[in-house]
Length: 595
Ligand SMILES: Cc1ncc(C[n+]2csc(CCOP(=O)(O)OP(=O)(O)O)c2C)c(N)n1
Ligand SMILES: [Mg+2]
Image 1 (cartoon, protein in one colour):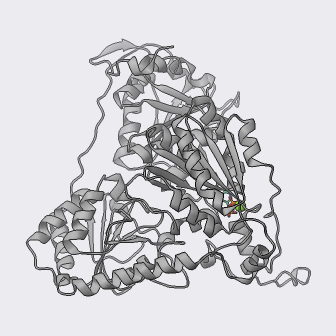
Image 2 (cartoon, rainbow, N blue to C red):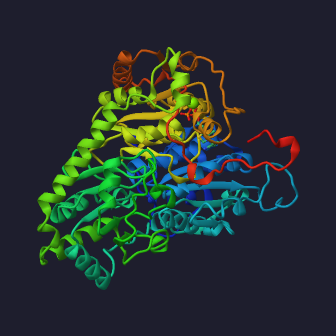
Image 3 (cartoon, rainbow, N blue to C red):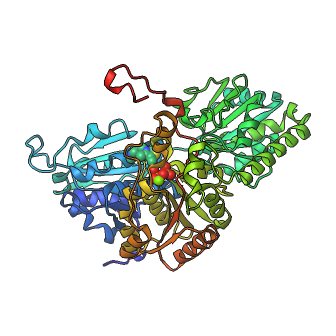
């Protein structure tokens, strides 16, 4: 097999005679693709055959959902396209959940979906389904190759649009269209340069910021996507404005910076919420202010309803969508931050007058939250106290604190959907961007592990850690084999509380502890890991947690994947969706006692 590193990766130039498979593969080369995640299938074997000679690594996965999550993680870690491919029909429908997740993570994933051959469409021959409607609401753009001669053009467009529209796209290819001969020129990638936004809106934003007595910045995911953390820091320092991270984006501003408040949203930082509540002007930088991310937390509605809101986003469609805005700027987060800093240099800042007072509020709130977290060893609701009382296992919060202390500086951490993974938001602190990979707003269990495998492929020199609950782990642990077979070393931290905890919390809060389908009988996850060729450790003593994480991370340098199974009590923190559940009402006699 060709050594990929040695292949010259320059696409052919000028109009040439070639096969559509060659046109497709050469367009991938022109777009800079070096890794494609997928499961092999006859539908695209003619193109797959060329991957090694084109310098493209094909990474076979266990399940196509895993492939698409890996593509998502690859994009989020690198800012470069994540690419996945599969067999027409079932291979492609297996992508769906992960593409929906990538949609809400704003990830430039290109899902390549070979489909039934054109001469048998509609006959129900084999592995046939209409593949465009399925993805129509979870992609930003769908290219359908309607003629083999357009293979390169449409392939290129799927890649260009994923970056332009900041989300997944689909490239749908009737499988017979990979064969034949075409005259074709491989298109060069089209990348638009994004500006800071309109000058009138920037002037209005700068004026509001200059007049602000208590400006607060919310640094959203757009700051990372624009590689704009430095520009955000410079703007925050110019204003001496505290900075909150938007929900699940704990890496958009360095946690150690004197102006950092921590993350908003579910199990976020109370300091961030208390500081934001005092703002008279809020600058949301690169954030859509998603509704779930700004819900009241800890019984506290922190959104400053009377503050003026400046929202900056590269996607015009999210401006003013969720929160009422005073000024909207349709611009790149980095460019806009730089432009605002430049404008503010010429202004007198009202907030300079009360700087010391504001800084003292920030310090007080940060210290109060740090102290509260330090003393918050376990949950204190009566159900949690009851189940933890006789347990020989560890309190989740104490486990999360030990992990935080042992976390390497270069760590990338993905978090799944579950009670313990969400409480982790309080304990995950990062100093640099592209470090936190939450399951974002599609909220699917099973996201974190495959996503982190993709992150590791994109950033092999960084330490890769996935946080996963035991329920979600069972949806995703098959991909251990991908780590082992493909030598992609990752650490999975599995919080084993023997339950689908996040949903069980709703039984506790709303359904009088009528547990149904939430208790889990688990095998030994450490044992399974070993049987699959990885390392596995099972920890039930707090004093062993830090060392287990440290040595698992070290083992990555030797190419080893480790599953650290942490035995946790069944106690449960605040629920996800208190906002969306109601105490039950029953009207029919037979259901009367179900209240
Ligand atoms: C694919 C999918 N199925 C179901 C759910 C509903 N759900 C949300 S959290 C959760 C429980 C997660 O349990 P676990 O992974 O064990 O973590 P824990 O809450 O126990 O910490 C479930 C079933 C979901 N979010 N995604
Ligand atoms: Mg669990």
